[in-house]
Image (cartoon, rainbow, N blue to C red; front, side, top):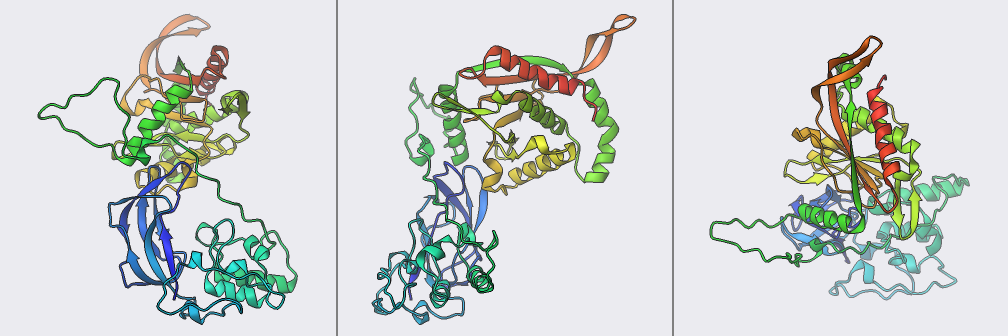
Length: 451
């Protein structure tokens, strides 16, 4: 029987390592495809990792609490096909040299012969394609019987973990092919090669921390606390952002009395109807999305000397975690959502973030970020841009203040609800006029709130 290596998966862009939180298996266990193997925590998300194969667990190479680089083998499984037979019982290519039973071999390293006229389907699919796509013995056998060649097999979309082609996928494809069905679902599609990991200067990849400009003396009684993986990423990215973008911050005071009144009138009904609380963040996200549509330059990124204005408006909302760290889940297409849709998305993402249940897609693709200083009773702050975006909005606490209000009878002093908004922006592409107008547009939407 051959062996299959379970590797630490890549769970997001720029992720280079993960910490094994817990194992759901032990050596000697028999596992099925998609059984949960272990839970991993990265700098961005926690996730349960399913098995792409069925078989028997031969080795577990790391213990709980170990931090492992992406691509490193963490466990070894003795393969079995989906009928409970060993791989040796599966149909073998005619020209393939049979292994000695005592010689272990990795499934990825087994050499496959060139195709022959008699069996044109038994060549490269027996191992892997250029994209490192792995096939189980059962899938290979069915492909061989159906005369599916390497190129066609590689192009069949898979529904399994990381796009793996399952027995059900190949059977459905063969059945539809016999019926002459070539819908978008069954028509072969090119398998997209995985993008290479972006090179980063993250110190979390090594144990070499940046040296302080001034040596730090550690005295008796001082406590030295090593940064956890998330805090390392935050430290590196904040430092990098300040080096990349020349930051400028504008601050504006906003009269949100109408917004406060609207929320007070609707929060109970909203809670009963939607099952979630109506917070101020939802209208703030909506107002920001509208302003981004009005000023598309703020919804952009910089690539060298090119400015890339993003078509989609994906608003990230910073969430403080229970361990003191920070993560930014993303409300996708915020400009197309109703206030109820935004509220549901913000609530769901925040709950997932604090429960370490965010998926990689839920923290990627942001085009603009909002951070709420008001949660900590702060008037305002000067946030650091979340690269590769070009601006970030800071939201302060809402306070009652005496204010001069113009009326037809003259100016009067009244109690109004006020808050500060601060916008940090990249001065390479956003000048003071654009930054000021964009911030003022958000204020206008909030001051004239009337949903």
